[in-house]
Length: 133
Image (cartoon, rainbow, N blue to C red; front, side):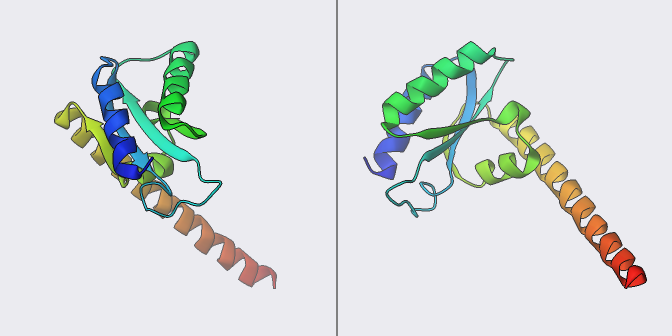
């Protein structure tokens, strides 16, 4: 199955699910950089809290559709860096543009804050190393 077929099949599946607000294809399949051992990276945002069995059921459905191992990310609780990466991928479906835009702004803001924290920490660590040496 090629990338376009994969997106069409997943779009059809997610379109029928009332609990899915948006879904994205990211990683090697989105970048057309697949190899023999590539899995499919799918990120999904739900309109409600899902229990583990519901998520597992959807994940199993997705794996059945794509026919290979799938990494399934729940955007509602994903780390900002992962959510940021997913949102930079290919939209499979976006049912509510307002929710998408609010989520995008939140993720970008959190990712910037995190990167700023890491950079500040790194500079502080380098200063300490200079004093110790």
